Image (cartoon, rainbow over all chains, first blue to last red):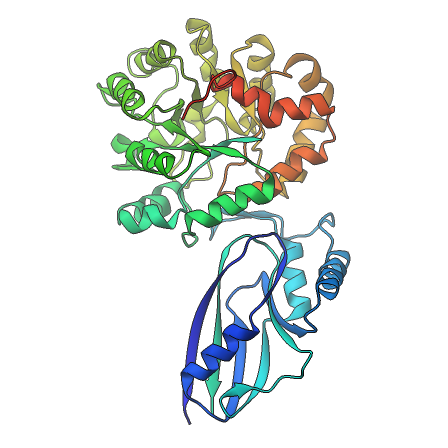
Length: 142
Length: 286
């Protein structure tokens, strides 16, 4: 079995943001040279997510608004304290919970060196506590 | 909007250029997260609505054999963006500290001095070590930010950072502009006592001990100080400070907005008071 991991960085610009990474994922899968197999697109953070949806601005806004409603900022979260292992205040519970709702990865079939996607499917990297420099991977194996 | 209190200890460009910075930030400052590009720092300021930010040096040469970050590094950052306002730091335990400050301000145009007695391990009211540095600040017409209260750094000694230690200093240097960050928490009442008595004593809003910045600041302002004290007796002396990267500037700014202060007071906190303490009201400076 051939297994290749491709890393890539994303500089986000806003607190919450959906970033279309479909083209990037296509390129990275092609770079592996693997023609047929499976690709796992995964974020390396716990306050970001990877999801697939129709690439429309109104849906992007609706999704972010829904996440904000489900994990609003003003609840008395336990995760609101100094995190000694970081040396920073850990006060981003809503970001973690929104990420948990969306998930950290998507799995795609790879056929002829390209991901199998429906015509309306866009792969998003979802920033939930930006702006920050973020990292994700595309893991392809046959 | 001006952030009076950021520590540029997470800037990747500084770490890349200086391999000694990482151990100093980790072992002395007590920050254990990965560096981020300078562009991310600016994006974080943007997300908070901050136009300009003070970047602070801390000279811990005698206490810990390092700087976090150095005056030269602050000058480098100032050269990268006019958004950044540099505060130098000198080591009060050094006999050349006052002259070091004069040289640094002359060479780089720093707008203020940062001292952290908890990390630098000096006595705030030491007339032999610290007073020449305060005198130099008066001579140079720059403010001094003196860390007071809780020091999150493991090696920090908060007992050295009690705001009451500043009482004699502000009496002996009536022209010295002193910024007490973190509202001096946990010694908030002592800090407020100094500020309501001395108009050259400023405070910043970076109160961080538990909960979100909104939780901490609301507790202190509403339960300990009282909105009306800010408005009546300290309206010209409260400054917005985030204490980045201990917390995100966006959340620190949100905490102040959530207080729902009188709009004129909020404007002073976010901008006018900082311009005044920095001596930028009516002129531009780096």
